[in-house]
Image (tube, rainbow, N blue to C red; front, side):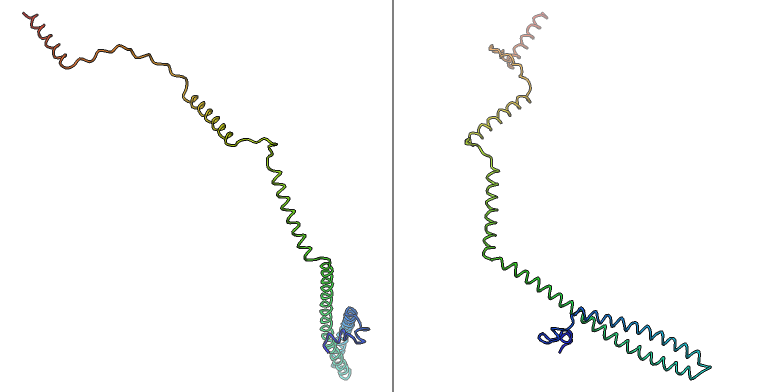
Length: 224
C-alpha cells in the first residue's frame, strides 16, 4: 500500500470511513512537533547542567564528575533521537499537507467542472447557432435602416440632373465674364473716324529730279 493509501485508508475499508481527516492528522503532527521541540529545549538545558557539574567536580570529586558526564551522554543520545524523529514527522506533515492541497485542488476543479456541465446542460448548440444568426440578421437590418435614414429625402421633388448642371455652368460663365470685365477696367474712348479723302501720295524720285532741274534753271536765269 502506498504512503497516501496508508494516510487516507482504502476506499472501502474501515479506516477510510472512521479515520481522521487530513486536517486532523496535520494538526496532530504539528502538536507532536511542538512537544518534541520543548523536549529538545529541556534536554539541551540538562546537557548544559551536567557539563557544568562535570567541570565543577573534575578535580575534587572524579566520581561525581563521571556520573555527570554519563548523564550528559544519555541526554545527548535522547536529543539525537528526537532530532531524527522531528525530521521524520516534518517530512510526513509536509507530504500530508501536499496531499491535502492536491485533494482540495481536485475537489474544486471537479466542482467547477460540474458547474460548467450544469451551465451547458441548458444550452443547445443548434439554438446557439440560430441565436447568433438572428443577431447577425438584426445587425444587418439595423445597418440598412441607418443607411436609409441617413439618405436625404426629396419629398416627391425630382429634378433632371443634366438640366441642373447646365444651369449651373451658365451661372458660372456669367460670373466669370463679370470678373473679366472688372479686371479690364473702364471702357476706352472711341477713336475719330478715318477721313474719306485720300491723302497725296509721296512724290516719286523722278519728280524730285525735275524739281531740282527747275531750281537750277531759275538760279541760272537770275545770274544773267
